[in-house]
Length: 517
Image (tube, rainbow, N blue to C red):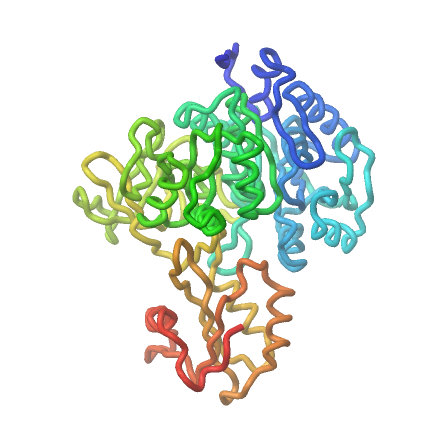
């Protein structure tokens, strides 16, 4: 069955329209509690839009959705699209401090919590005084108080102007950055998945990538809806649940981060995977190693496709072609419609084959960072080129190879960790003079290592420090190791020499260094 439309969609909820007409009863989204076909999903979005409007949500309002992957989040995103309101999905596993920062920064008119799939969401809801609502098909949904004083943002008919979703990432300063993605951004990414990856009716995607992140929302959910495919949602990753989905539930597609594939291989211990309907596997979010790629392809009997993108690019920039799988770990050529250029430190194009800083332009590039025009101007120039901050080279066949990051960003299991945020949490603990956080490469992943200098070299209350960090940071931001040093290595200016610490992090702790966290 092919997709037919009379006019291209202008809003993300309109991705459902051709499938409501041609396959209304075909499965669209399901989780452990709810399953909806295309017509039922469309109807639930329409009814929920009316309920949200009655609850005071207007066009241009920001609405925070605190939860984990479930059908309810899908319905809410589509409903808010109908109202031209801005959903901002945040992972319920975040700390109270982080959730409160996002509420304050966004100026959320309402906050909703998917408590039926997340005990963490229920705890946040209780803390904020949320109450249960009786909305059709959304059992377990809790609604926070109305923020009367907030003002809506302007709305626009143009899909390239109207914000469809705001996705939060942590800035290098530790302050939250709200990436504003337009309907045109998300429609481009969703339709690119459909055309480039050739997804369609009959496909079943296993969806464990969090919808609070751009791939989970844009590619996993909206890409499935653009394709007329079905999406099986899982709130949290476990290798056994992944194996069950592939072997017993008929999943045809799985896209994850390298660490997920590595953990599945550990579970299988090299044994072949009996996945009768699986036809496509893909990876993104973290560097892929040739050894993991080879091991995955041997166990699955399929090519492991790679890709590259960022939150600010909705996220698609490059993908390996379906018809031309690669033996190396290149992320493939830029997708149709996206331009790239590689520049040196002087802002000049680098010679072919050499490494340069990657800049991107196209219909995928964000509207900007919410309430931060200065940071937006620094990231996107007047000609629309977005500076990714990543280093890459391009080979003669047009494929991009990511060489590293110019920022100090740590990518842990596909999640971004900015060292400054972790350092700020450590430095707030009594007796800490200063700290420095670096990434350490481990097999198929990166982990967080912290170096701490204490007052006079005094010992710290380690249990207290552990509690302190867990109250302030998400689990994936917690250091895998903390080392205590009499003094952090520094230049004459006092700047901490993180290159020295990165080298030290790769070496075993020496005698006299307290045990790790």
